[in-house]
Length: 116
Image (cartoon, rainbow, N blue to C red; front, side, top):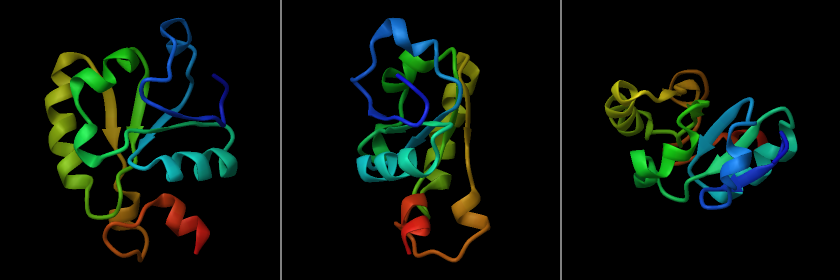
C-alpha cells in the first residue's frame, strides 16, 4: 500500500501493515478516498462507522502512529475510546482540528471542508 491510497479495514495484508508512514483514520469511505487524492503523503483509512474505533479493528496497526480524524462533533466520543487503547500500547491520538479550528456543521468531515 502506497501513501496517498485510501483503504478500508479488512483490506490490509499483514506483511504490508508495518510499512505505513502516516496513518489517518476517518469515519467514511468517501472521506478516505477524497483525502487520499488531496493529500498523497498520507494513508487515509475508513472505519465505516464512528462506533468501529476499537481494539480489535486497530490491532493490526498497533505498531504504527495513528491519527483519528473524526467528523465534527465526534471527537469527544473517539477520545474516550482512545483513552482505553493508549494503556494497551497503541500510539494513537484524536485530532480536534474540526472541533476547534473551523466553522463546520456537526456531522461534517474533513472532506466536506475541502469540497465546500
